[in-house]
Image (cartoon, rainbow, N blue to C red; front, side):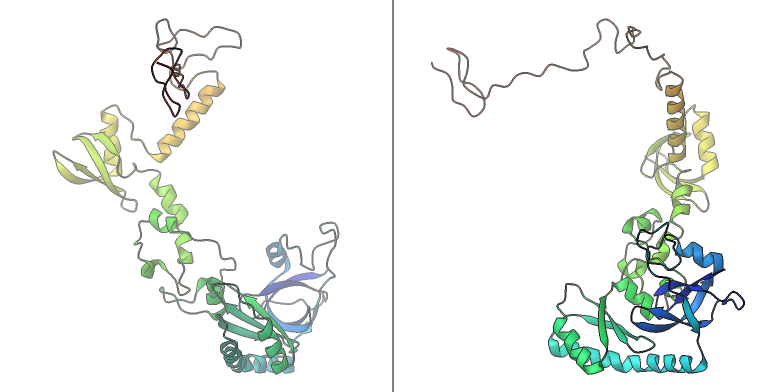
Length: 366
């Protein structure tokens, strides 16, 4: 049976292939040669078997998908063979030559006067293609640059524009935590990160403290966000006034780790109280501490009451179609009508023989 393998190349680029030799299966870390669009390339196996097949998922261009899933399936791309020492030596020579290639590309970019930053260059193993990664704020017309580079290196040139986060993932580095960038080591998909994640965690909104090496918000802001949101549901909302043993008090802040609430009263000043004690004080007054969690329970109770034929407010039965509704404070005799009749506004002149009308039109005849 064919073995599905995940092969990773330079940077974060990876692809999925088939290993057809069941007697000598591949292992994680093995160097292999694979067929690519224009020739052969060398990469290392990062996942095999069911793990690789699961990560491949619904890839539309993967070689392991069958004809039943793809209307026009791509031809299978099997792994050519294991890499030999000579193959690895040629691969290392390509990597060492890429720094010199990058300097030459930067010189040509400056000579053409293009506003772009060359981030990285990558030789294909057989040198049939040279990929140049760059970043730019606007669209760049690099057609003349491609022709110049093709005549210089005598190979196919591909310029690929990437974002600053992808650039940091390719170049790698050390984050503020002292470890390698997550996007370069293990984080395979860069999900969007917004400023609301930092606000929910009460972090400093200083860009220098919550930004990574790429200049964008830290990817790790999303790791614990779900915990913060879930924990805050047990606390009252900040800025809300609640009735406690000292009277009305305003919630200033909450400490989800020590489970404490910071309260402030105009008569008694500020105090710090555990969440359990606050619940006891509120329940002693016959009230309910309104939190996001309690609001969810109330909503579920109202939905269950509606299914049983009861209204959420007073528990009255919902009348059947054609049956008169029971009189209540809002629908009984003498109750105010819920909608007032709008007074008609005249845009033209006044009535016959009347005074001047309202709006843009003139007055009636005197």
